[in-house]
Image (tube, rainbow, N blue to C red; front, side, top):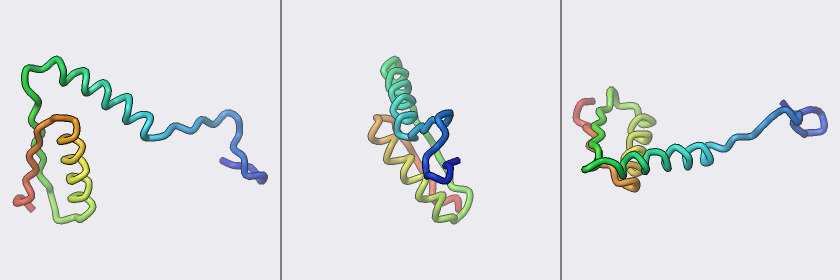
Amino acid sequence: MADASGTSPSSCKVVLAGTIAKSLLSEVQDGLGKLSKPPLLVGMLANDDPAAKLYADWTERTCHEKYAQIHLDYDQC
């Protein structure tokens, strides 16, 4: 937590999500390279929550960018 001067204690470390994601995506890419064909990710939405649809759309976009096949079933809602 920041003190009155607006600075954080020196024991704090800021970890950006992008840094973690880059490392994890690199690990996934290495694993995908060892497969004979890309995996198929299948997702189904459990309800009509717009936030869930948005998250599923982001997941779909990331999978397509990283060469994984994905099928999202929106008809189950």
